Image (cartoon, rainbow, N blue to C red; front, side, top):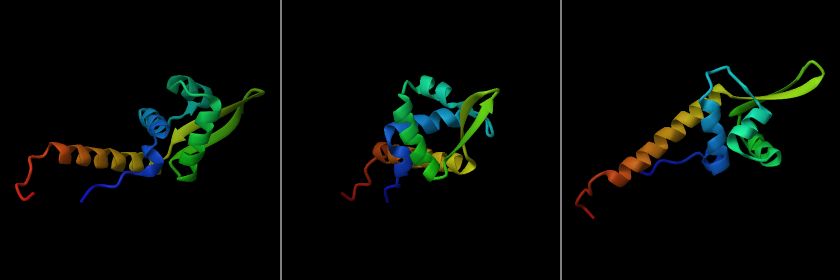
Length: 106
């Protein structure tokens, strides 16, 4: 049976977001502009993808202030980390299927 890939994570831009956030230690967060710059995405494009990840419960977005300046932080949730681990396992399983020798029953 072919493993199912999480469609929320599978979109290229969202996969890049999740991979980047997963590299942070659990509980750490990054500013929206920092993430935008790291990924080389526009603010609008990143916002759309973060919205889909937030709807799925994979990211947490926190809006606060540093002094008088508004700041938005982004972090991967535990659910998001688990979803990424499952996605990673599914990809590895798919790749293993393509490198396994034929069963001879074809």
